[in-house]
Length: 318
Ligand SMILES: Nc1nc2c(c(=O)[nH]1)N[C@H]1C(S)=C(S)[C@@H](COP(=O)(O)O)O[C@H]1N2
Ligand SMILES: [Mo]
Image 1 (cartoon, helix red, strand yellow):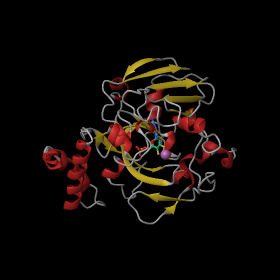
Image 2: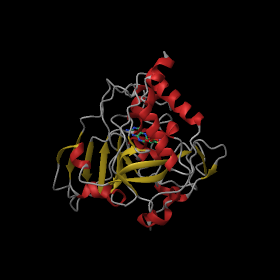
Image 3: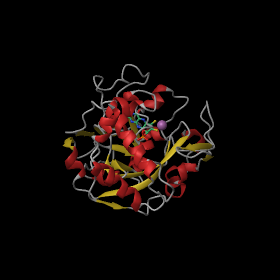
Image 4: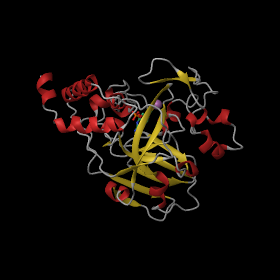
């Protein structure tokens, strides 16, 4: 069965990926890589999940905000995931998110703003120019990746809703669909998954809503159709598959903090000097690399974001 399924992959899909990779000079495309893409397709097909990523045609490359570090392989980014709604093993989101429907998609906007309402995803995205941002992603579990996201600055999206002066924070909610989310009921977190940012963090130019990566629309396991990306914070802040945006006066709850308040805070800024109660945060394992490397303050974005926290005790901001 595996071989037949592998043949079912349209050659064009493989070619477009190959083209993309060869344009990035720091990645050399070997035949073994093409083979591994075939095998990946085959295994995802076997698990019932067709790798149906759509190419994104119109995006600009924002090099000002991008790192030139070596990209993590596409196959790792889409197969090693945290998305607790689908289970806690790293392979679970790719294996079990196939029945999750991400189109059509609506986002409800509410709270302290002039333009609340239920919006079609297209109406939120279409007014904006998509851009590629190559960011580091640092999980609180001490692994990291370099991901070429495609998205829109969150500030551009939020401004359309005209938040008022009471909007001190913005809260985000992921879907609650136990019938297609096997992690719900099994994983001990409280669902739906919720997260939040202080409004100035949300409006910071590094903060984006991503709709794609590696030139293609997000797959379910990465948070299709739209997810937050906040590169200077631990990965759990970057909530996937957003269905609700709420402008609020008070600091909103976040799932990891509710689950283990002594281990995970609201701010969750990457800080190599503050250890997690159960492990050090000083170093990290870059997925695909053999040796661990030092973790940087604010995940390497200190020049851009440290001023947001001036006067605050970074040790207490875990
Ligand atoms: N809805 C939702 N979003 C989520 C999570 C989750 O469990 N549910 N996990 C977070 C964690 S812990 C990390 S590290 C990142 C991982 O993103 P990636 O799988 O695209 O690399 O997603 C974050 N967003
Ligand atoms: Mo994470």
